[in-house]
Image 1 (tube, helix red, strand yellow):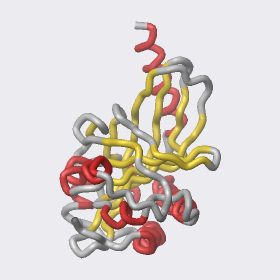
Image 2 (cartoon, rainbow, N blue to C red; image 1 turned 45 degrees about the vertical axis):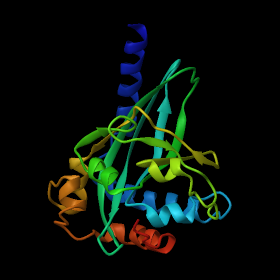
Image 3 (cartoon, rainbow, N blue to C red; image 1 turned 60 degrees about the horizontal axis):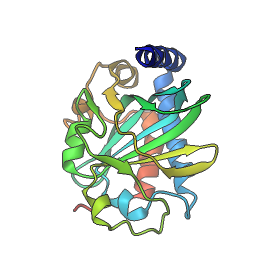
Length: 228
């Protein structure tokens, strides 16, 4: 009971700290572009090229907050981009990640998170209004290194591969148990209309906003569509 109460308090505190006005949505898209560029500009520590080439969708959550004493908590807001049929990129849709990790976590901090959604099934699930990572979609920590050939069966079967960067350290991360939700308020701030992730990413109901063009350029620069 005490652990549950502490978890509720931790999430409430992180959610309050991460709450932004809708005008912050464009800035978050720009931050997502910066995070991806900085990660991929380090050849020996970036995301493997062959995984970027095979990814159906990419979620980027800049400065996801971690905190809590004894029971940890996570809360972050970011963007989700998905491939077009010919390999270009649609989006962004905006998302929130919420999740807890049990164990001794003294203090708190912020971490940049990148999730690669590796197949059509994972892409379909991630466009839902919400889903649980590791529950509805299998997830695992991704390998690191731009030149690494991640051809093992485990990596190829995973629906979601996770990465994190904190204090300059980049590594694979498993976010099992975390929940990813669409953010209708930030979608409205970006597009001027209240749309779901599916309407933006699957149905293509609106062109990409100007704020997303640098991020689309970065994704095109670091990935060449290699449909499996």
